Image (cartoon, rainbow, N blue to C red; front, side, top):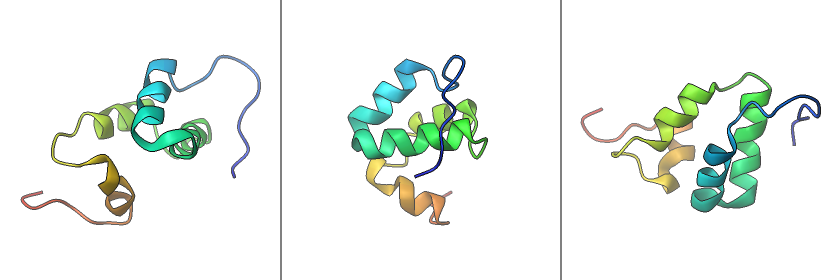
Length: 72
């Protein structure tokens, strides 16, 4: 697991962490939190990913690996 920052305010807003937690569980939420805190993803990218109606939560990992939905 990546090292997370332990000082200062969290970079990922709590409501987004909670939403990810509900969709993908603790491991998924912590993974996204780590990516944001390490600069691998922005909060805007997380928000965009959560609001995409054409990508189901279970397809997110496939999306990161290069898969795109029909008509992308």
